[in-house]
Image (cartoon, rainbow, N blue to C red):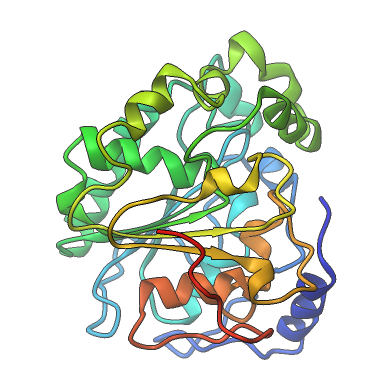
Length: 309
């Protein structure tokens, strides 16, 4: 997986122990250089800090955060940075695997099944999190398909009442070319075996598909939910990159390079981007979206302008 220079710098910062403290005072390592392939060894392993169903949300962070991986991925290789980062900041963090198809989950290839069925799996998981934590709502943070699929849950499965904020990292909100999805498969071991007929979600994410036409018809957002989209102009999977952005009320669209011109992060590196995350660029934007009253400033300034919405 390619990584931008700022991402690697942030990894060194974390290695020196300069991460935020959790509510308990314990520190978990935040791995900004990524762990591609980890999930293929341990496909059902939770990322660090996630899935403690005894966790009770604090007054400062009353909503649990549910992390939703993308196509061909799973929770292990997607959230080795953001999960411990959120934990270190005092959040109750949860993550799931969804979308296994034709036995793909056994080898760490998830997120390829029928998207409405995946949204139903997300719905069940959110209900489990709410029951365990006693919270009234969750926040969702998703990468790629994981930033788009929850919109089906919000629109068609009564999820809007249970979700306060949806943050999408390079989400496939308006689809992409099939070439983009095959590009994604080339980077992930074993994924190419599940493209085409074995990947319903791939066809559903193609630009102009019947699924996306329905999802985006009648408005791209639902009332009561705050939306943040974080994208890179170097996205080689969701193409053109502007197709990630949403239009509608209560939407903030952020382009990473408007914050840090030297950020070379692309689609696969987005969950590990030092700008997207809080000790980093995209992840700083994630923490700000979850707690806008206490904005986190990325390593590169100025703060991102809104580019749409």
